[in-house]
Structures are given as C-alpha cells and as structure tokens.
Length: 271
Image 1 (cartoon, rainbow, N blue to C red):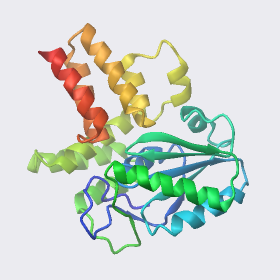
Image 2 (cartoon, helix red, strand yellow; image 1 turned 135 degrees about the vertical axis):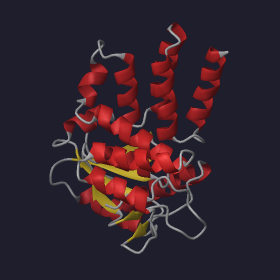
Image 3 (tube, helix red, strand yellow; image 1 turned 90 degrees about the horizontal axis):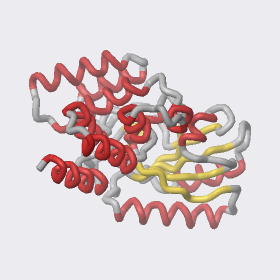
C-alpha cells in the first residue's frame, strides 16, 4: 500500500491517497497507517473468523462500487486478538468504521446484501457530514510528494527512525510545512508505541498517563487521549505533557472537532 499522500487535503478531482487496492488486510503492523487513511476517506473494518468469507464478499462488492470513496480492511479476530480487544470486539464477524480516526460501531453478524448496502450508504452520509468527500486512487499514476513518499517507504520497511529523519530534514528546510509537521508527529507516535501490547497496557491500571494517551490515540480514541493528558496537565503544568498534547493534535488533525475542544481546554488551563 502506497501511503504517500495521506496528509494532503483532497483537491476537487485528485485522489487523496494512492493505494494498491480498495480492500486490504489489517494487522498491528499497519493499523496506524489505516487510521491515518481514515482522516481522508472512511474505512470499514471487518473483524472475522479465520477462513470466513461470506460477509466479506458482500462488503467487498459494495465497497468497490463506491469507486474509492471508502476503503475496506479485513482483520482476522483470532490471529489479531490484541487488535480485536483494542477495538472492543467481543464476537466475530463484527464491522466497525473509522471516520477521522474515530471508531464507529456498525453491526455484528452476517447480513443480507441489502442490509450491507444500507450500512455503507449510512457510513458515506456520516463521512460527508464530517467533510470526507474525497476518494483514493488505485495504481501508480497519482502524483505524490517525494519527501512524504520516501518517509512512507521507510515506514513500510519498518525503519521508523529513517522516516523520522526524512521529516526532520524536510522541516529544517520548510519549518512551517503542515504536511511535514503532521508526518513527524505520526512517526513519533509510532516510535513510542511500536512494541506495545495495546489491549494489555490499557487494561493495566499502572500504565502511565503519557503511555495511555499514546495508546488511545493509536487506536483512534483521540477524545480519551486528550482528556487523559489534560487531566495530567491540570495537576502539574508540565511542558512534556503540553508537548505531547500538541503533537497528538497534529496526528488527529487540527480541524478535528475533538482537537478544537481539547485545544480550548488547554488554553483555559494555560491562562
């Protein structure tokens, strides 16, 4: 999957990202990229049992008919148990959506095609009301930012420090570039959480607030992540907590309603 244009806002007739297919397999190794994609198009995630395909076939047909207006991700709930737990999936099949990083429960169990179509239509309406009206392109012909492309190639190769170095160098030349600022924030979050057992850490009451906030952000619960850090900042006006909050604002996207809300609360705490 080529994730080179994730931060770039959609132009009227330009794809917001270039992917190799509209249906992909999800795992801990790429869930952060998938969440980032949901900043631009809605992502429907099917948690399924190993080998199950009945629901997937109906979902895939519906998704492909939308010509890139949304993506589909299949996650094996048995093989990726920690992801299923992180998204609070108790039974499979279960389908959720990601809209600007926020999980939206859709349904559990297999459905008839007409019901699947109804949920897809409803999801597209919700996405449109949140400003997600772009589409993704398939293939290698979508223009990309070469710096962002280099960073995402490093991410896909597992070289997070290399991706960070790409963005740091780019920001040295263009310190106000919003795409590079957001890209660096995303990579920093990946570095901090790459080896974490998300579900286990979130269930552990001894997990520190800064780690808990990062993990919540990683699975798209930005509202909860912000609240954890805001509560911590209210107790001790820590520059480190403030810096983490500001970085997570970049990951979520500065126009996200939860970012707007949290930024106002942070301002009140500062003054």
